[in-house]
Length: 235
Image (cartoon, rainbow, N blue to C red; front, side, top):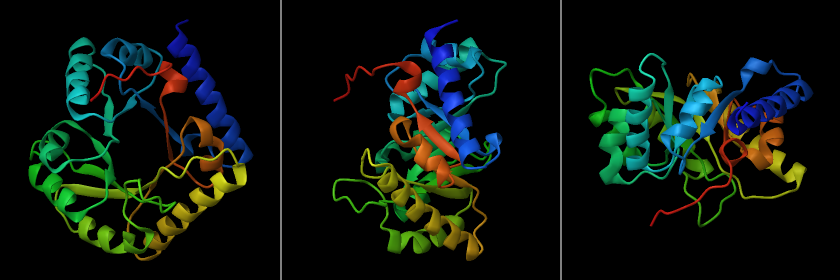
């Protein structure tokens, strides 16, 4: 059994324990394996272990990996999520090659993604990134501006607004972790109450996965706990 296979099982066990603690169905939480900085071979190992959804932060690296894995495993359908910051000049390749985008924080970016989504592909699934902790250095729309952005994105063709995403300020305090995720869940429920057909709360990583699941996460994003320590060579 490969290390990646063992790690995936350990993460699955952690998700299972957290959903049981939260009295939620196990299948209510999906694992997004964050494969940034790891090559196609690592993704292929994870696919062979049963993983089907992968997250990428860097556009060109992600596109190259999508192509390489598709060439190696042409008969297996995978789901590719873009979870990094979006620059205006990078929207076209994101719209062309990814199935999901978790990091929409401006209407201009959403408009470009909609305009550049190929007719041959289905709607691009979109989450709005919320700066839930109010950190000056963090990306994301302010909580007070979420509803207006949701209205704008939901009106665009070729996009499907699925939910909200956040990366709260890191803390080891479990109660503080839960509080941040609870705040995002309140925004999510408010939008659903306004008639938005949302089904996705993308929140929680290795260090705060349990708190996120306790507060309703439907997608958790886990990378190094699956693939190992990262080696960054990005500029």
